[in-house]
Length: 133
Image 1: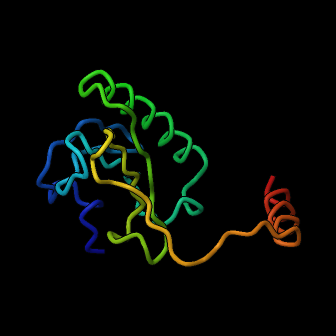
Image 2: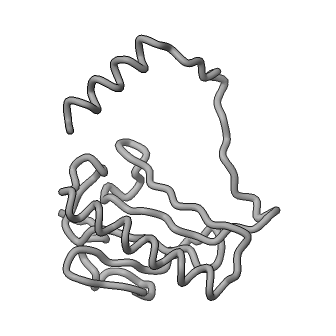
């Protein structure tokens, strides 16, 4: 597998955290200074493929990264995001964590779809989630 995130030695950036489950490093194309990528060391595409222990650990480490970003950059806020499936441009699960500022130019863009609450969809979603607990 030729996944750059599976080969730490191929990364051309600074690692800010590493343990047996995850690695965090500076994004080479940051949205804002301090943009960090947090990845599991094992190769997974999407969050639903990651074992619960590792996924929980990713969230705990993301919290520590947010604390560091707040102390270093004193941002007005921060964003945490992750793209899945075809929208995961690397093909290895990675969480973006970066400081945010008013007027930084980052924002959501919306398509033409208007979100409408649908009781049947909501009911089905609840059933699927409940079946996994």
